[in-house]
Length: 605
Image 1 (tube, rainbow, N blue to C red):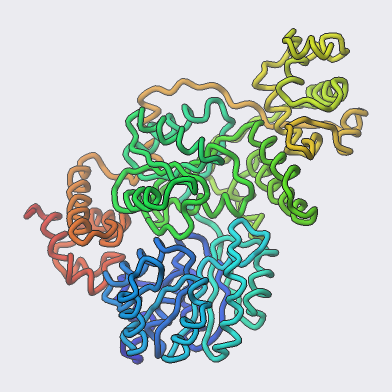
Image 2 (spheres, helix red, strand yellow):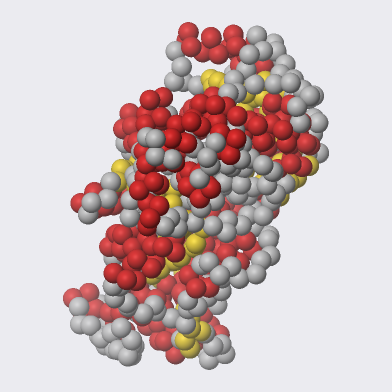
């Protein structure tokens, strides 16, 4: 690339975008001029451009530290589609292939080189980097350096050596999710005290957040997909490997193509399933959190959780994998009482030091706060990351504000029954006592004789489960430290039991029957809003994209994203000159694919 070319010129002609978004322009200028930077930008906000364009403007090759092989391969192939010389060094390469990449680096042929952190820190790799000009270091997924973060990777800690070995080379650290404490840790561990910080809005306005109370989570998930995302690509996060397998099997039984992904699968199966997810349309990946970091697939239309995440950072990063292309998408979560107890048990029975347990409790409590809030979900999420906002109008609480009820009397009964039964039983047993059920366990422990036996018959079991869930979330009850799921009162319960405090809780959602007209209406609200008359042409555009991608063995979105195809559908460009003004169509892609898509748009295919 010619050094005379401006950042905006590169953005328009190489990447196909008319203007920078948010603070991208500031960041590009700062790094291109040799400054260090810490960039916090939401998933889908365009972080990669913040180092890719400076890499093209500066002399030498930019070295990108990336934690995942799949991410490196995707990024490199995407750059090749744009006509940019890029490569990666990782374990998938043969010795001969790795030496060829090294040769290209030393000869100045590469503009970007992607390397895993553990490989970067080897003497051989550091020696290689000292032998040719390095334009900049980009440290992607920088939150991985935080020891108490949600995605800690110990190899990241050694990256501070880059500042020591290459003091003149600018560094840019990037992440999508970092609270204030994680941000401080990134600065400290990567020696970025003098770096400029660029904190963009964390808001993802195209994502609709919804959280429902569990009532057969797999059935609820199926209804959600059928109602709003039939035929769409999505990710379903589960807490355990067993649940991943069961969920994938269940969805396949009901006609939804689903694949499992977790650390218990062999490497070949994981790689095969991930490749299918990236390259095929309409795949649903059921996964543990082992899947997803660095997944650049822009047309994921929904991310669902059927178990409660451990932290708001993890939840926000995972949901951020939906709608990276800016088109309408959903983040849907089902959670219940057992989720709360299971996660609290995991913390208390774990082997972590008390200081770390306290941080984990705080993170879980923030996640519970989001799940139980009656205010705008987006306000709670953004507030956690230090950002103020108005109600969004695009979450379940804004669309249909939840009811609340005076649960003071019910809460006192629940707490009293917990106390009267000895504070050594789980919620299920205590609810049986409240409802006056003469189960074997109730009779065995003589709990049919306690004063609280049967005093809760005015509420159904589902309501009591909601009460106990919210008492746990509110800190009035706690689980034991042995991991058995038993409940005991906390100090916060005393004023409630003494009548010194009133408690209003979130109401139970109404049971609703969904007819076909409601399903159609709901789907249109979260779909790409393609008119029925345009649907055949839309499918032909997607088919052409698929043919071109299959011919190169690359994911379809590397040809053009859904957002770019939708822009073509709406604008109907008649000439290559018209096509050049479509967002996401740079000069290289215009030259390679422009005529093929014009033929589809105007019936020549």
